[in-house]
Length: 619
Image: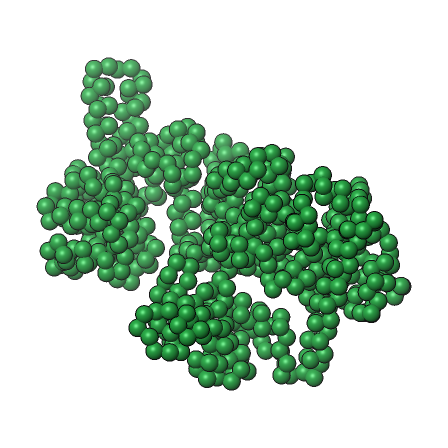
């Protein structure tokens, strides 16, 4: 069976190398790589590294080096085809059926690459010749130096219907048509596709020329013309400059998506090589998946005009179903009327880097888009807004991430339309950067029937059972500590043992000690609190979801964070209410009465939240 290079490339692309090797070799995370003791020779100090981004392993001790296929053939002794079949089955790829024509197709693909490379060379020669004077003048006006012209292989297609066809006649018209270089209409004589245009070669991740883009130099249409899809080129799966941006992104730990060829080249001129662009289409799911192979959170940079913002929203909605804990996007909006090329020309690299500092997360872009979509001045429009947010969060396939989006949207909605909407609405900072636990910004959960035990919470003070549940939750889920350490540090619990456990975990969080895995248990054990903490977790009787052994971890940390929020905000509201009540005793003006009533409602809201958390599962 003959396997094409394209099939093998796709197989490697779909195989997570660390996952494959990690089945038989114990890997340890080391930055963006994994390391282990080499499976090919005996050693005590790890010198074997696995790099998922580059798709290969390497041992600095014995020089073993290879990809997923080679690992199976050399480490497991599998025949080549057996290794390919195993990887293809895991990746969901069908092996090409045994076909005597497969070798012919592979040979034809090789011919298409050769024809494309020959066309690139010919276009580059034309740019430097007499016919390319206008194109060179255009590049001069755009401040593209010769070094970048050479690095990107820029060229020029003369305004002729047959010059390229004549120059590449040795390949034959059939090959040139299949490569997208000639156009055939109604069985008439084929003619050159690119005419009178500045040419941008499109290369695959291996650096081979597989397609072209052409920009017209006068006022004709279309402004940009791209190669059609061919056996080599799928515009929905390819990104311009991927061959240069891939290695650069690993050094910079970022990849930037811009809208066009000239934006990519302008950024390269400013020393930013980790930029790519789609090829005449909106960013596709396949392109987003390819970006995630480079970095967990690519930065999408779109022009500040309406078209640019629509492109950003389209990309966000396409990415939303695919996001996960280690996969998201950030978005940069440039000043209206400017693109990256304009920004670089006006202020150099510093201006563009400053713009990148304003990148917002995916959740912010979606929230702003939906918030600005229509006026939210009636109950009906607000209900529609909330429904749209819930539907968008429901698009996310990863359940934990979907739950977090739902919670975040609910928090923002309640903050925007809660008891102090004006103050919250005027705060333009990202939600998570705003100060927590501020008066007038407490969210109201939907009312639920309450048990008698839960109703006792409303009588004042920190309920001992509730406090024990929170501390037990922290022992079980210590990863939440860094986000809540400051608030927890001053929380009165009314139990010296609980406060010792709390103080030990807070101190660990403040000093940067690891609380993940068994870290918290080790810290508590060293403080002589291990048995007490274990007993607390075993005997706590409150049926919070975060204390249930079968609870969803994301639900656990969410409920625990909610419980801490309630415990911290409750005394703040009670103190403010007491002060307002005292003031009302000395004055009867309407403002003082309104403030006292508002704080009374907020106290009722936080009591409902507290009682809601006290509900046994299923009630």
